[in-house]
Image (cartoon, rainbow, N blue to C red; front, side):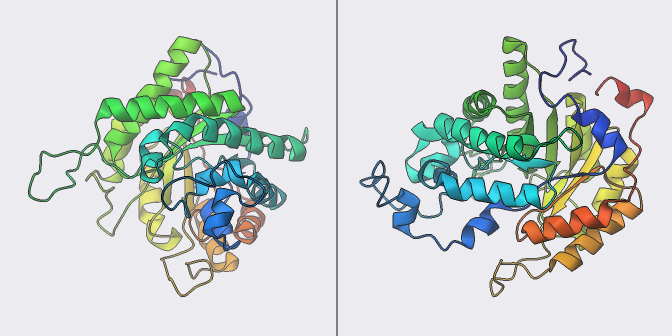
Length: 354
């Protein structure tokens, strides 16, 4: 088993390529949706009254979900365990926004490494608790896109302006990667990609880390189609997105978030047609609705039925949920696809990548 055509074997997550050929694997659902159910206050985010470490931190920090890894670890662990109990094979670390670039918004950039390491340890402990010889569980180090974009100007009057550089992103991602690896992740998930250049910075940092350490973990890549044009925000079609990153030889390649399963189908079908990696899909629970308890309308029955349609037609190898999904959604998805066969992605061109 190799990554990127190189000689070093995977050091963790080595069972995943074979498992993806045997059955459709299940990813967890939304972390943010579950956190919202706790209705945490500013004091809760600071960890008060028991934890006074951030009592005097300047500015509001409510909404910094990644900080909860340090201030409310019992909540994060409970959410992980709920998803594992629902049938998830892979759970994501609570690190979607745990880069120094993203944490600058809360004046907490210096906490990035710690957030990633501790979050990985929490997810690792949960997976170890639920793993069995027949059903091993895996930790995916979640690497989000950051709030900034390297290829689009933030100023409509200055097309050449940028609010972040490739090198700044690469350095931030490298710090995140090192923290996640130290905490014990089995694989890395570069997800919710709206700008391919941001993703390339993360993947470049990953390859640097692998080369320098001699350690190689599986890599999953997931983009997000932002509207009915079928393009990610930086302008690429799904086919162009795949072709610009296929040289990475990811373990899985797919889409998440954005439109929900119903509107995502043609783009998943396109990936299934052209992709020589395993295809992943973890959609939102439909389109946003701020009047709903979870912010989205789809019930577990609706979402699972739509995702099962992908599985029935042989389009996917890994499924789960994004915004608005809960353990009930993941349980329903897992039950729905349990008897479906995974998409056949084992081709001559794919052999070197797994």
